Length: 299
Length: 240
Image (cartoon, rainbow over all chains, first blue to last red; front, side, top):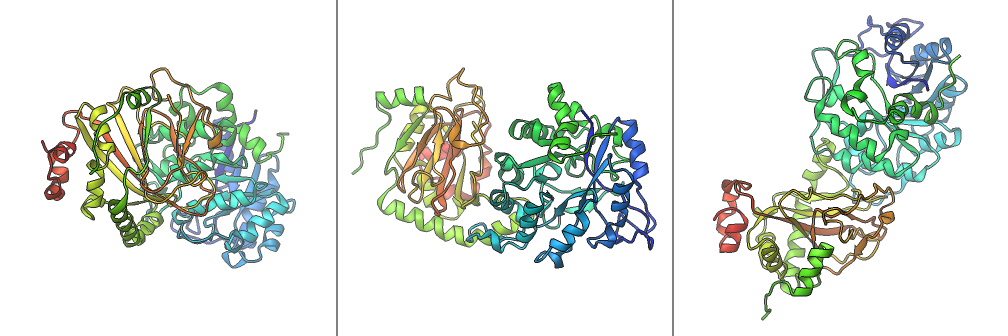
């Protein structure tokens, strides 16, 4: 069974070949290359990984991601981004990026329905409805890390599109307005409440067979150092509700290279669920991603 | 005049063996009117703050609890100890109950239930009782409370983590009119069923517990002390 890191980011320094947006933790001169990632992966016996676009939504800004997928087609798959201006008619953008490139899906930060849960719901009016519809037509994956205000809306789309494979990122936590910052290692940090709304929104999505969940992002949410004992219960609960065959381990590279380190995160599940059955660990560490995301066989 | 009395022998037996009791019309007439009006008034008044909490990632959008109701309207205190179910709380806790909390809750429509089957506390916890009071009529398939009778007993189970709520073996569903109260031992497995009716469920969940010394900080309810004006209330809130 391959070991697969199901979520992280690579990017090149800004150039005409690899244009991208630059930001606080991705300044123009910074690069986090796929080759660097591969050295970490090799040291931790990780075979494959999902590369998630960062640095812009335009097709041009996906150049480095596409180059990585082209160079290592049996090692990586990719998740793209969609400009909000294309949400109404995303088909061309989605097709250009996904036709034979190794990009197998797209990441969304919103769902785009009524924020008031008491308002009537018509999913056809959700701003992301055309994206879901096209994902259904093209068998693309949707990768969700949505804002807190939209957490309850995911269920309507998952319900409406049972054929779309959905991966809920980072333990199902949906970041609240004004809760994000970066720590001294330049890592994203999200303030969360211990009795988390996720228990009654994204975690309930275990009901749907087309939804899988990432066991990742602990470093960003925990108030304690590795192995994040305050979140160990989350791993256990998600194992009980989703089952190992719909959970995927991920590191969220490169933010974690320095602290706690890639190798430590590769042991996180064993550390926090020491009594996990070997076959469940195999599933979480790669089996689920291999099957659900259709990673290619290694050469 | 209503004669207030505690459990009959048959009700004692049902409570001990099944873990629940149902009180139809536990709240009715003028008291129910007051409760419904206060519920709707404060639900409207606090809604924006709840939506802000949802956007901040602090509150779930799948249920809406009006905060701090005891200080908002006396009816929310009255329902703790006036309706007939309170005599049963006293009986089951040997007249030594404390108030743990209240959830004045509306569950909006959603494609599934906002929680799965669960017990609240393990059996080594002091006796922990909830009373769920329907504020509007709740029909079958309308987000009604459901319970697995007997699941509170030592040695019961194990119970499966079913994804389809209706697949829980042996469960019983409790639709009811406004004013119906369902009392249950929270060692037992329970849930709110899915709501396919188009009408959000309004209910109040009152939580009581057999007293443990020091469990309640007597100062916690100082701000509503003038309303805690009977021996029962003072005991419930740890003030005597």
